[in-house]
Image (cartoon, rainbow over all chains, first blue to last red):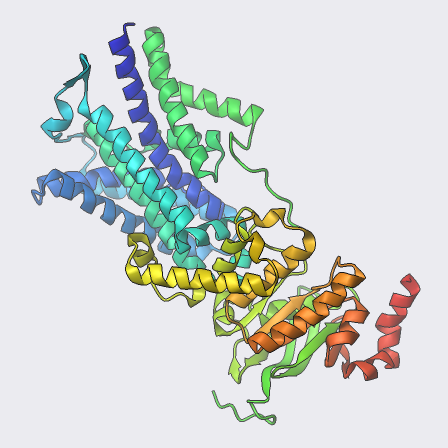
Amino acid sequence: MNLATFIQNILNSLTLGSLYALVAIGYTMVYGILRLINFAHSEIFMLGAYFVFWGITLVHLPWPVAMVLAILVTASLGVLVDQVAYRPLRDAPRISALISSIGVSFFLQNVAIVFFQAIPREVYRPAWLEDPILVHGVRVLPLTLFVPLLSLVLMLLLVYIVYRTKTGLGMRAISKDIETSYLMGVPVNRVIAVTFGIGSALAAASGIMWALRYPQLQPIMGTIPGFKAFIAAVFGGIGSIQGAVIGGLTLGFIEIMTVAFFPDLAGYRDAFAFVLLILVLMVKPTGLLGERPEDKV
Amino acid sequence: MPTTQTTPADDVILETRELTMRFGGLLAVADFSASFPRGSITGLIGPNGAGKTTCFNMITGFYRPTSGEVLFEGVPIAGLPAHKVCRAGIARTFQNIRLFNNETVLENVMIGRHLRQKTSWLQTLVFTPASERENRRDQARCLELLDAVGLADLAGEKASSLPYGAQRRLEIARALATEPRFLLLDEPAAGMNPQESEDLMGFVRAIRQAFGLTILLIEHDMKVVMGICEHLWVLDYGQTIASGPPEAIRSDPKVITAYLGEEHAHA
């Protein structure tokens, strides 16, 4: 492997890794606050991609406008899912909301099949993302620079929200102790709604960029990336945003680099993530940065 | 709701009427009817498991009472969600300290400001001047509160790093940040040495004065109870067995049997 290929592989790893990370953040935030694994998250990812496709083909919006609108619409949808499917179950046993999330996942997938049909669709890619450019003599796909950079911007924005705004403080408070948060007057339901909105917006951004990277849309496109992002979140320590980012990037690097160095293993590519999950659960079930569950007195 | 009670509403800030909590077959609190004059410091005492904390949980909206009513300034609040009760002007601390351990001392107090902030979350995200102004004002206010409880120097420390007594004071500062008129303290002197308990008594009186509070406290330390409470309610097995000024309670035979007697047996 020469240096140029190696650099391309690094960029590919960063691209895939940040896409996983963006989705993993949504899983980890919702888990942190509600102790709920939101299985519908992978469908949010898928719908984000379809909304852009709609915006471009049906309404003829310019590409960036379609992307921003799709992210906003998907974020609202994420809030709606919480209001309809999870909020009524807030006081129910945790397993109920989990089952509800599986139901929402199937529901959204089938709605997508009805509305968008099951046949895979080609995605329009703007030329400025697709035509390779030369950076110091290395041919680079602009997309592999665009995705990590936009992801970085979104993650910095998230860090700002979580650590610098009152809503972020509310999120941290709720994830530590939801009961005390209620008693201290934190508007818990509103903060949870914002959390779902943010998580869904990030998933939509990831889904849209995923569709640019692998330009095909289909209603089940969220399933495998969703699973892998979930594994990334568990690997990093579910509940921890930093952990989700580290987990996502690690998974991206493992997948790309293993195939790059051992091309024979390319067929097992999807298996790496699951092997990683099994190893994590065996060796360190709380993940890299996960907190051990505190005993409440 | 009509506020024509037998007692003038402006004298009594909070009143409970036959407040009852049942957990399955267990009657945790039965027909707790009490009234709390504005500006008073009242103690709720009784042996372990008497239902004191259950009363707190019903008043603060943490439990929905099985039956009965809570009137806060004449308005019924029993069964309201906890954050609405808090917004109405009732705040509390906890028997087992429940701070947000990973956040700083200042952030813990800022959480209490959440419900009094007027700018929307969207405004804070996009950094509008109004939200910035509000944020600065609230931070200054929280620092004042920390100063009042003697923790101003530790504003940037992680809450979990504080010593025990300071954590109790931080909980009080966090409760004060919600701008309560009625403050419930659940065993504020727990784990304190005699000197700290002595300081606590002065502190409780001082915050009542400074913030115009009515205070209801649960306490096992009889020196503290007798030292600062103007009125006592005594619970035993969920029943109200006595109520009155501390001197009367001290000599009430029923209380001595149920509570002080047991206390002596342990000592």
